[in-house]
Amino acid sequence: MELTREGPGLLYQSILSGDDPQVGAVTAVIARANADVLVLQGIDYDTELRTLSALAEQLRRAGAVYPYRFAWCPNSGLATGLDLDGDGRKGGPRDAQGYGDFAGAGGMAVLSRLPVDDEASRDFSALPWKDLPQADLPPGWSAEVAAVQRLPSTGHWDIAVTLPDQRVLHLLAWNATPPVFDGPEDRNGRRNHDETAFWLRLLDGELPWPSPPEPFVILGDAELDPAKGEGRPAALAALLADPRLQSPLPPGTETADFRATGGPGPLQLDYLLPSASLGVRAAGVIRPEPGDPLAGTIFAASRHRLVWVDLDLPGPAAP
Image (cartoon, rainbow, N blue to C red; front, side, top):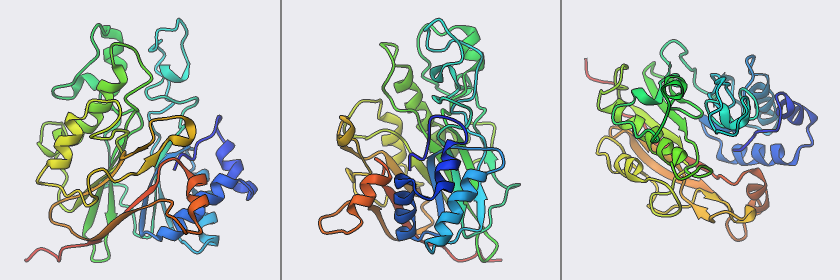
C-alpha cells in the first residue's frame, strides 16, 4: 500500500495524527476489502510494531478488527557497509541490502483475524543471492559484494496462519525490487527475476529449507508484468504456469497504475497464487471503477491496488 515515509517514525506520527489523507484512504480501502488476513507491502517497520499497531487501531475504528499483527525486519534500508551503487560513497539508499533511506523502510507486515504461529513461520531473507541455484548474478561482481549481497530486496517469508480447525495455511510473501533504475549490467532486472525464481527453487526442493506443505498461497508484489514493461519475465511466467499453483485473476488484470507519476501506465504487478488443493470462490482487485464513490479514495491510497481472493479450504486429511 506504499505506506512509507522519508524517515523512521514519520509514518507512525502520520497515523497517530489522524489527519493524513493517504493513511485515511488506505484505511478505507482495507475496510472495504474486509479480509481475514492482510499481507501489506511497502509499510515502514519498527521493532515494537508500533506503526503496525497504530494502523490496526485506525482500522478498528473503521470497523475492521485485526487482533494479530506480525512483521520481521526487512532487508530494505539495511546497511551493507559497502558502496554497492559505485557512487564513491557508502550508506546511501542504494547501498543497502534493498533500496531504502533507513532500516525498515517500506517493509512487509501481516494483519490477521487468525492467529499467526511465530514458531512455524520462516524468514528466508538472509539468503545470499549467490547461493540461489541458477542465480543470474550481474557480470563483474567482486567477491566482496557477492559475499554480502542478499537475494531478497525486502524479504521472503513463510507466514504460518492457524485456521479454525487448527490446521495451518502458509502465506509465502515477497516484495521484489523493480527491474529498472540500474545500468547496462541490469542488476535490478536480474535480481527481480531471481527473487521470483526463489519460489520455484523452494517448491522444487533445491534450497536448504523444506518445501512448504499444502495448503499455501504465494503472494506479493513481483514488480513485473509478464507481458508489458521492462524486466526478465521467465521466472514469473514459469510461476504463473506451475501446475502446483492457481492464478485466479485473468492474464493482464491491472493491479497497479503509474500514469499519474509519468510511469508506464497500468500493469499487472501484484499476485495471489493459491496452491492447487485450495478452492477459489472468487478473486478480484479493488480499483477505481466508473461511478464508484470510493474511486478517488482508491487513487489516493496507493499506485498499487488491493488484490484479494476468497478461498474455500479443503477438509481435514483422513486419519
